[in-house]
Amino acid sequence: MTDPVRARRQRARWPLVAAMLCGMGVQGAAAQEAPLTLQGFGSFHVGGRLVELSGQPIREYLPTVGGSPVRIDPNGRYVVGQMYAQYMIPAQQRGTAPLMLWHGAYLTGKTYETTPDGRAGWDNFFIRRGWATYVTDAAERGRSSSAMVPQIWQPPLYVPMHDPWERWRVGAGPGSYARLETRPGQQFPTDEASYLNFMRGTVARFLGTDDDAIASYIALLERVGPSVVIAHSQGGAFAWQVAQRRPDLFRALLLIEPAGTGQMAQAAALKDIPQMFLYGDFVDVDPRWGTIRNNARRFAAAIREAGGSVDEVDLPAMGIRGNSHMVMMDRNSDQVAQVLQDWMASKGFWR
Image 1 (cartoon, helix red, strand yellow):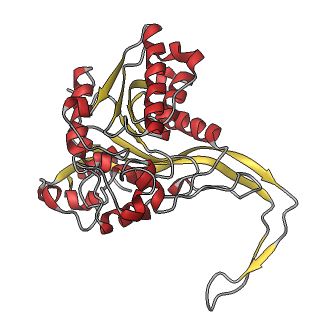
Image 2 (image 1 turned 180 degrees about the horizontal axis):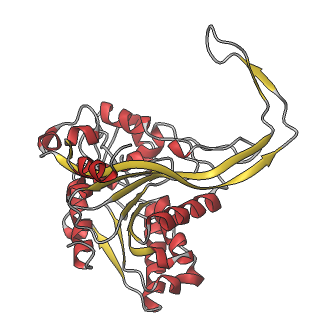
């Protein structure tokens, strides 16, 4: 039998270089960083519910060339709405709470791992500053799995190549992908190889699954404990809604270009959670994003009126320019991550 004390000591001495964390092909300064020592790392699934199906036809198919036919009876119970989480715990912890990294629509936890042009992502950035990080694939994304369509979930949506380029402010608005046009000073890596890498990481988005996503986020926080949550886009809207249901599970909340809000009538539920929300560049020249940010401002005002604290960060106003909706993948992503790090330190969540 393995000695658990000895095993813990061995884990604490595991050196993992940045290239191992970020995958093959890491470029630039990230590849030159000192070895990173972790106390431990791993993954788990949480949440989900059981759904019973009946009346479905039995199917038979050949799974592999040279194999044997398989007969599948799809009637029975299914686990639906579970969430996948991957954690990395640095040997020297400085964060005073776990740090969650929640992604947006059509995306997975890959958002925070390695940028499309091969640089270390925010997961690496925060681990190196002593945060125990938890990167998740929301319910119905990536390694969280999905459910039968249309028996359990509605058919999903997918994004073609032009959509993020034009809608997430990578390019210069509608029609710009056909010309590969960007705005001056754009920070997203728009070379052909990088953009293709980014699109390889997009996934289907299912509709009608919000309740499953919220339930699994709550299950995650119940397992890990009260946490500091950094959430992007659709994940930001989820984070506000989850926090309204369970404010006791949040130490702080940082919203990166939230694409929605919580329930206005329940804004007071968030008054005891320190919060900030952040938007990048080109928002004022994009009517849709201008509306989204104004909605976030109104929601933040309601929280403040109830006695809460919500800071707004406008990157261009700080002199940090050119950021797309995918702030954590832009070429200045570390500069923006440092803004978040400084805010968390100022609130006493980093020692």
